Image (cartoon, rainbow, N blue to C red; front, side, top):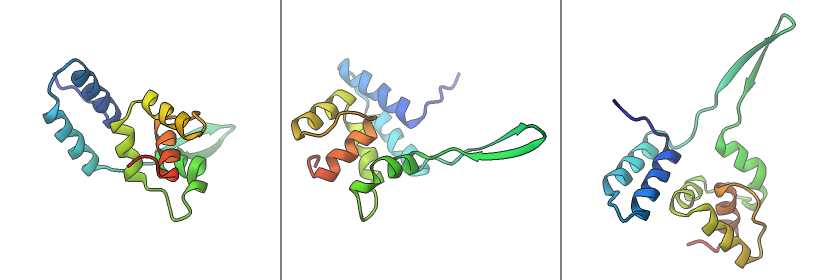
Length: 124
């Protein structure tokens, strides 16, 4: 039976395997291939009916959400691929600790924390 994972789930699986001392090289290759196929999440459209009228809503993509929340930190545009790289390489706790050391707020998800650190030039 096939197992379907999104990029985040695959990253978590890799972290669990490596934390247990296992080898996840092949899974890392799969993760890179997955990112190369579809680097940006697609916007989903939902149709809702209420009161006889039809309303279409577009869900915000991850990149749009980051632009809204931390876009002010990057006047030349958000380095989305770098943020994704740090999101995969670091755990939430590691990013929070780096933010604390830098005197930055620790609120937000992993991508937001990575964006804050990238804007300050702390992550290399």
